[in-house]
Image 1: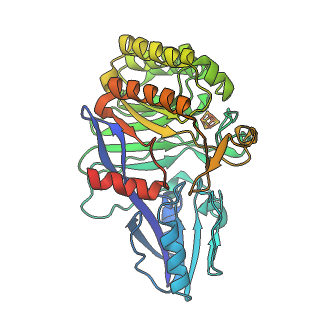
Image 2 (image 1 turned 135 degrees about the vertical axis):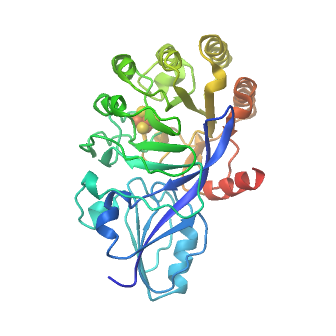
Length: 392
Ligand code: SF4
């Protein structure tokens, strides 16, 4: 089919630690890989960096934004400026949180995968990835699920809440390794690794240049499963991402995280004992902290430092952001305010601001230059990432 283009984006992700400190890597949000061999004959594949101008002014454009809104405003403007373009936007995790004015020549798919939209059934044999020339030190994604959701689905702030059964685990037997020079980080895409998905880890070959990344919950079930899986793994080139949010049992209970600070620590010790790399995320911006909670966090950080090789941990610090409609959103008026990107954040009085800041200082002290701090972002992620990129 002529005049058909499939646009995918790459960007710099700052959040993995491979060589002693957190360094930026090019990361491909390769949203058409699952259908690559089918779509290859139907149009042209184009890679763009998030925020780049779209070099096409007519025809049919299918754009995979994955879960990112990066470049969305530019895409909308391009559609307005070029009435002969028909743009279809989507991706498995893509959803727009704010009110936007979408022109008629854009079809906006929210949380619908391109595979679903194009009526393509998943088949591992159709997976493929073409790299733009000259790229090294990058990572790419490989999906373990079709659809979206998380098997826990309870956390009060999270967009995957109430979406427990909205995905299907794909019948993956092995994960493709694209050969190119330099380290490859393969992100196994799933909202949260289920015990069934974990078994895949035993199939990964030991290669110095290949790293696997997956997100797990630091809960009892995850711990028990890892305990069985870890001795059978051939490689420990694995980066486990885990959302701690805040290591206080009171707070974890409030947000229905379904685990405890002790359980998280136990899981981290286990991963550390097997030499796996750890990537944590924390959130600040809480408006219900107390001195006891701050001390709880402090004690946990000292305990973490005593129990694991903290230098192997990379960290992202986020602001607590609340999705409209989640339980935490229903708190009394004055509790939250809307942000420019359509999400909500807590309103902090001076006392709460101070306590959040003291926890933040603590994280910086322990994680040092392995922590990427997004807590201050007041704008959408696009602007923030651009600022971050200018710094590196
Ligand atoms: S925060 Fe993580 S564990 Fe909690 S519902 Fe969301 S994806 Fe699941």
